Length: 128
Image 1 (cartoon, rainbow, N blue to C red):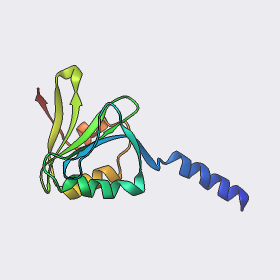
Image 2: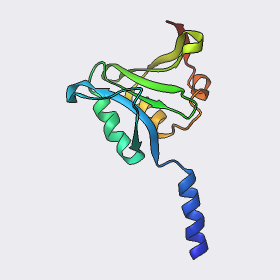
Image 3: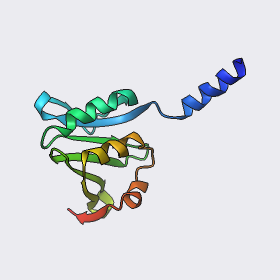
């Protein structure tokens, strides 16, 4: 029994229980975390944050991986969300329009490295 609990503890430790670097702005709540000062958000708390972000135009939320790659979601209108991965080296970003339920699904399963989501989500490059 003790061995099983120890093994489960390792498994849980390997699966992230938090997003370590998150930034967002929820204008209707006057609540902003700057992209250069991201904070840790526990995974159980992320749905509430996504709900608040999604209801206000121009709200956004972004996640930064260990390599400094950002995946961010910008609310154009409720249920009309722009997802993008900026690529400063290419002087542009990869993105597309998605719906709120897609954003929740992506964030629920979000795991680094974030660059792989360019291909996985069929994001399209646009120059700045």
